[in-house]
Length: 436
Image (tube, rainbow, N blue to C red; front, side, top):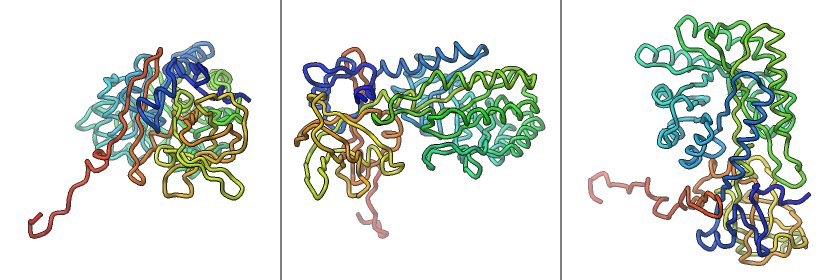
């Protein structure tokens, strides 16, 4: 399979060099340095339009998309979501603050969290249109808070008890998961809302992330509809089936999972299930993150040292574990292309490692690749989700600059951290006698 199919929609080869959105990657690296993260607006826009078109085609009732901020959120991304009328999922005060600064309307802000702090909940009551309630303790806190605060619409998060085929760290809907409530607890929560006049408006579930087989959505939706049939929602209700649609990260994973088939299955299951139970169709909400933003992102690194050791060749690049912990956490498998002459013939397998003091700092293992030289630029596709949002300052790493690419123009949407940034939160010790 052609590795170029993993790259953003606007990718091209111009003058034997990779370009995205008409921007030459060699020029970007020279101007902004590496490691460097690039986001292609065309791919972002196309991903959203794909979801919206499929929902419009297969689901006759009201529907909406919530962008999952945990995949990657910054001010520019939050502002971009509103260009498409998306709702924005946030977890905690930090993400809420970004959404508010981006002027996301209250009606479009949805707050998640498995253990929301008092501050999180109070901020959600002030700034959000929806709180997704994870547990009975949180609901009781909201009940007490309702005496002094206006409470936004509430969705109850169901733990469906279904185990999906993905990495154990990205499973969220199985029995024993820390997320959500089982069906007995959901019934108790609905009763509590009715007794305390809380605005219960919907039910939510999330099976996990990087899902390639949508079949488990069928029993999960059936369970939600069974519960909904016994709940009085008043003027309409919302069913949020979460997100989690996977992506191809490596050419061996191609083709990409079929978005249209995924949405058609969900829509048909809801339509048939509501008809069988004689309940009104819900407003259908989907929460994609990775499948919208993942393929829009590319990570750009420069090769420093080359090592031929034992049975392998190491190409050591200037980023890795600190900006992309996914290979170390999940064993995530990536691919790559050289920026210069990307269509060259592969010469030998290469191991791409980073500069950090961990044996787990390996970005790619055993990838057939063209000849590599020190100073070469390497582009890793499908780097838009769960990389920068999980990044760290390990070994004093400075988080990379992030660029927005559109119509031949590149603009910085996150500046590269400086060494001054690393110590900006620190304070010197003061001796107990008051001397410096």
